[in-house]
Length: 129
Image (cartoon, rainbow, N blue to C red; front, side):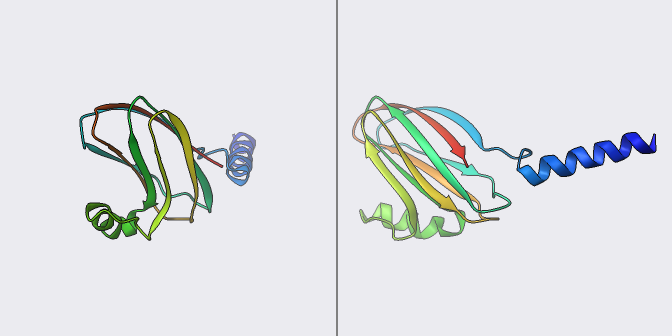
């Protein structure tokens, strides 16, 4: 019994040390109406992590990645038509593309997608490394 617990403890420690316990891999699909916004929170990583968002869309969209603590400033800048200074990354397009940014340890990130003057079917594939 003690030996079983010891092996289980060692296995969990080894998995945690290699980062196997928290691999970021999220896929979301949205059918956006004209001018609609969807936002997705990304859990805070235990250590600095590069987050990549692959975007597939059939109409123009704008995608931002930013830290949750900067959400108010980013939203304000977008509403007045300016590029948010606090955005970690931005992508605009009407087909496929990607954006990538480093998310600091213990910081929640937000991926914000907004359709333009046409409805858009959008698929986001979010991965971390």
